[in-house]
Image 1 (cartoon, rainbow, N blue to C red):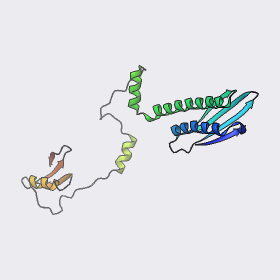
Image 2: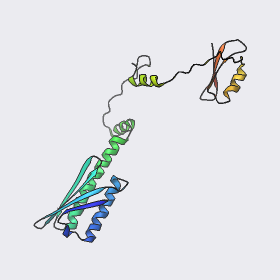
Image 3: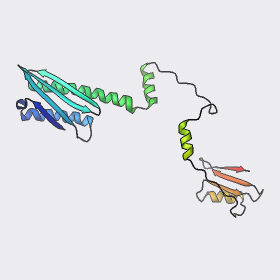
Image 4: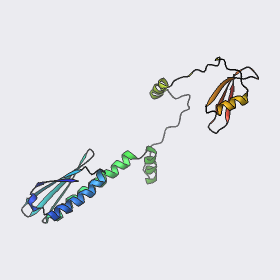
Length: 197
């Protein structure tokens, strides 16, 4: 993590700088896994008090922690501790509101005893109005016509099952027993559906 010092920087000893950077690196790991964060440390002294403010960005939030003490190290520790509390609060808020699915949030609210709005009763599929999304996906779907007059010889049901074993999901054929067009479909459970015209 890059630390930018502003103000009375001559008061910062190399030992104190290492201590500050170690604490801010810990916070930087919480914020950004890549380690590309930077923090601004502002220091000013009024009479005997050292006033330290540490600022850091967390996505689109500016976090700031301030500390004041007669000892510079104590003032820095106060400022970093306040910054850490803000950071933890933002992380939990972001995780709880943005990362949980809606059902999980509702379950958490029910467990905590918070009132949850009643869900609307499900409507029958015939009464639902068509959605705009369904119309746009229907336009993207293609229809493939099966030509059953392409010179194929009539098949028996057993031959159609053998044709399905070659990898097709369905077979359209003319049944040799009744001379009708039939469709044999493979079901998800491995069985077959036969549709006769």
